[in-house]
Image (cartoon, rainbow, N blue to C red; front, top):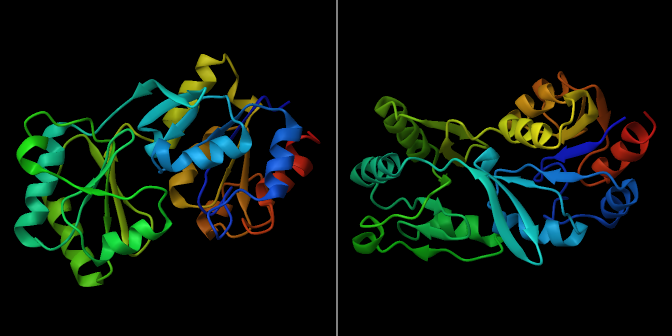
Length: 268
């Protein structure tokens, strides 16, 4: 019997418009099983879905960088692993030295700051629930707030390739880098993994992992999918992700999560 469901957001729970469909909402609420979003997004970017679904279980943001709960509209951090401050500074210094016109996004718990505005940031913010503020370097580095994710949205492939090479050559300590697409590169703490967040919640709720299910579509979902007892992959998932699935469900534009809950989670 499944006692907790975990779900990726983009390409999984959310449709092409970045929304939770009525079908998914009905299925999730009807199942009455604790439901946790597991996303690379910040808590603020996740809030619309949390409120739409009336979620009360712990949630996982920044790919496992923060585990938190929302109660009465307030965010309470349960456990977190930010990027080391010195690494944040090193990344900014390295990229600004070679690509000074490329903006870097720095995500705090609720804030979004950028080193400068460029065409990539302009493109990135189109689907965001908040707008970025330009980082005031004179004051920020004196007492930096915890940064959980650094994101590059780079529209020119040669610039992205150059940034990746610079950062790989730097052998940055304590962080993990992952490209989610040709134009997006994320940096998080090396401990910030979706599987880590799932493990933490399962242990906290004294669940056997065989009692958990997860939905996903992308490469960064694979560790989470391999961990749970019932891995369910979207029809739009990549081939290597589908290989770790126990079940395949419909795509994210056809209530894949809701259908998967009705067909596989509730019937087992």
